[in-house]
Length: 529
Image (cartoon, rainbow, N blue to C red; front, side, top):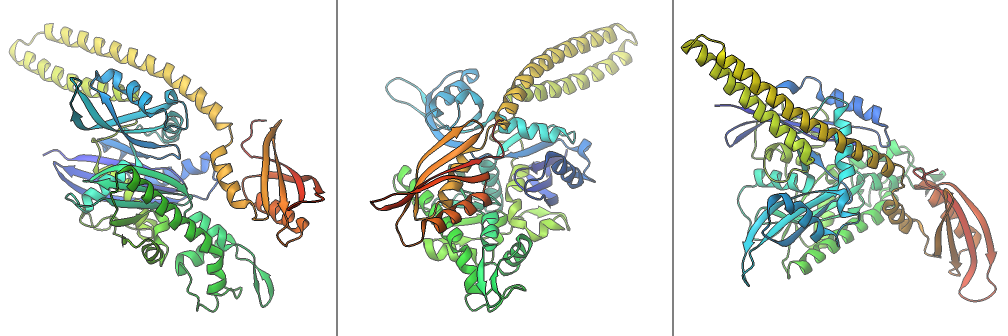
């Protein structure tokens, strides 16, 4: 009985994850699980070295399949209905159906689909599909990163599908009611809903562990005056204390009480609950009133102590936090090191390994074809070897050897044509990726700006001026001096994505609800010069 050796990787965000699973028929066994945290903002060289260290000791040459988890803020998961058409035309058809939901041009996306059911009526045969789309640039970014350590994936699985495989493995069987999965990552969250064991809804929203840590570093008043935790101190308290209790007298060496620290992070916690509630309400409306009865927490941010109780109390839902290897056969010691301290972050990479060879595959078509050709070539080579040995025993001649050589030459010529087409497509994709890299992340910038604007301020205009951004707005008369309001607003902008923030002008308004109007100039790190 042949054992399939599967390596899965999740290289998104600040945490790199790895899992090795051996599968004999339908019986998977978890052999190795690893995790490595990389400082936020690290360049490609640092991340590449971290991945090499993570792979150390893994026999890559023995792996039958390499699966990677794909995630991106623009990932789209939808159900569509299309006529039954040839498979080679289906990708263009689903892109057309998805175009009203996509934030980028359809031709710049990678898509894949699963058939949910066939539909009939009015003499036209149709089928209902579950479609996933992700920017092609995100696929190429991961491929380029993995190529730095010599890895060539055989499957690229969207995170929602990986989590579906994981939950199906640790909790087999269909569920009578929809089940939600809330992944709380470092810089973003995602709510998924499963019906009958399949993810049918997915929505991303900002938040996560990094936001809570950042909020903990806010300025507070203590007996010794104004104090603030460093990022390292905030991260330590977050991991050891979690959501602080009001009666906690002193946290850390700066005399900060539990009540004070809770006041800093309450906003982040409330936003997490509100966005989760909005996502559940949107799903219920789109699913004709279907209600989620249980919410499963995963992701590194789900380790925050007291978070499950906080969410459950406010949403009125049953909250589950399950060990990622629950119910799975594993080799003793498979989960160790840093992975043992953050197990809930491993659910996607485990799901990708358990679902290898099934479901979605966002790997570019030309690369999938190349893998297919390689498999065919290996099978052909084995068949030719067996034929040559048989011929040697039967005729002891060279005639069949000549035929075998000709077939190998034909296989080589076929492979060369495939590689030539692939290189041309890769050059086009790399060129597009480089252009996109120079463009600022406007969606994330506007999202962050909504949290930075004080309640006394409203914005009237935001314009591009050369390589900079100009913000116009007004300060309302709500008690605080306009100068103090503007100073706080400038400080908040400096803490976020904007750089070179400067107040260009400010003048008082003689009458009305506004006290003054202002103009602020700033830049973004990713702006095209």
